[in-house]
Length: 194
Ligand code: G4P
Ligand code: NA
Ligand code: NA
Image 1 (cartoon, helix red, strand yellow):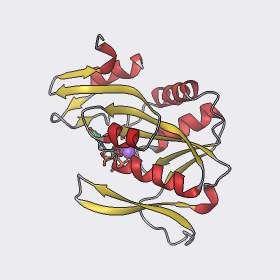
Image 2 (cartoon, helix red, strand yellow):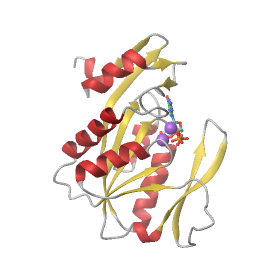
Image 3 (tube, rainbow, N blue to C red):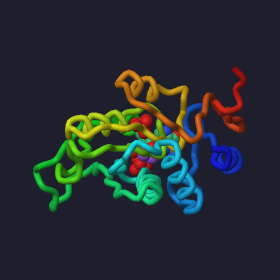
Image 4 (cartoon, rainbow, N blue to C red):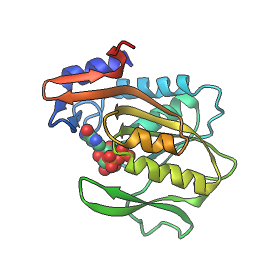
């Protein structure tokens, strides 16, 4: 997605060869127009898949799942990272290991909101190590719902996430695929000549 790649070039700050800071438009302050455009693009790519719901994980996946839900005309659900006191015991859960915090936490989705009748598109802001996304894939499969695919706003192709998801037979579509980066320099898959 050209508009997104340009924005990453203009405003993204590359903190190391692995971490991209995009908090001025993507995951702290959010450019609402850009977010809605990502939703339209996911809806276009996955058109004809009869998606019934979009699934993401709190917090920074929410705005993109909502945008995709709006474009597809379906609800979105976000997996919770902490158990709420109002939460029922009937939840699908999956362990997610956070490499940044060095701990494993349980993500959960109420069983009322996912089931065999559903066709699910998973959406998230980043596809990186894939830890969170693999957890969501496992939750969808446990629920008996059909997984249509995973849509990532930004993929860092040099990390393990894509390989892990492909090994699970998951269709992936990323709006911006970063093949390499270092401070002051970012390279997208779209510029590669094959
Ligand atoms: P993932 O590939 O399944 O997203 O999992 P991973 O464990 O690699 O990512 C851990 C967290 O770090 C995720 O947010 C993810 O969105 C975020 N992340 C990964 N790479 C980058 C990066 O280069 N830049 C930024 N800004 N974030 C990155 P999270 O822990 O789920 O938290 P939240 O921000 O969604 O609340
Ligand atoms: Na996220
Ligand atoms: Na995040």
